[in-house]
Length: 381
Image: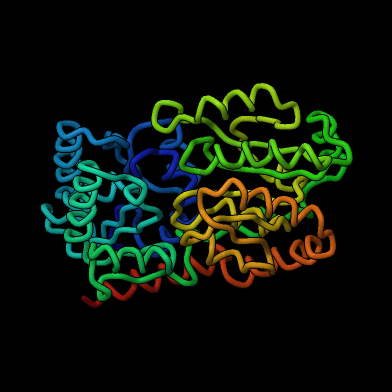
């Protein structure tokens, strides 16, 4: 059986980002998962039924550690002789594609799920542009996980159209619509959660993701501070912080401490209950690849307020299953939040359509089948 090496920077991505997909592909090829070490690497090995290897990688630029990672991976690839190497996440992409090319792997695939460099300027942007071009040059096929991302790659001149292909309608892994299904949750459990969070008849806005500046949290918190003065509402923030990499503004932190209508629940292994008690997801991110959170919300019958960026503006159809607003605009978030709460009939219509749009376009097994077709194309080459 031919081998495919799948690489992510950290083990959490291997476990979560590609959940189910690795087990499915492993029925057709022998999958070897590679990432930095961590508890999630063991989980991926057991859950997906695959072999794994450790290559320590950092998410930040670290030349010595990066070169060491390239060499370690090169040795693994020379030993395994895979048919395909397929990378995800920026650092794993650069290290993986370079090592695969040096090791003589014929088919080198990289999935692009977002571009941190888009919000960077100055000398660092020049460096990141160089690294991005190097990754794409070493790859034989690039899979942007949204059509908007494909357009950006072409516009930036990182790769030619011939190298680029979007899997299905977009997304890296689709969504398990059988798991993200409100019908699976017990109403009694949801009522208990609402009581625990001190939610009664309030309109509930929810955000799920990292609590960082890049995700628009400063604007979201400032906007909610305005909205809650005129409406009976709560804002639930589900997610973890990355204060060293991307801290929030001091004024945002002050509001978070003082506003009793903002509920921070931290990281949650199961986000479904928080979608189930929500009226709308507010996701004002500055940049995305193809946001799983918006897919998950839709599958749970929750419409979304999203920024007009690639991925978000492909999943959300403005006025049908949510609202699309400008990036980095506190006032636009205020207007959208108020529009949703003031128009219950439209809100209910969006709820009704949200799940069906996800089911029709982003079911995970559809994405897996489309990816398998891409792999099969290489079998005769």
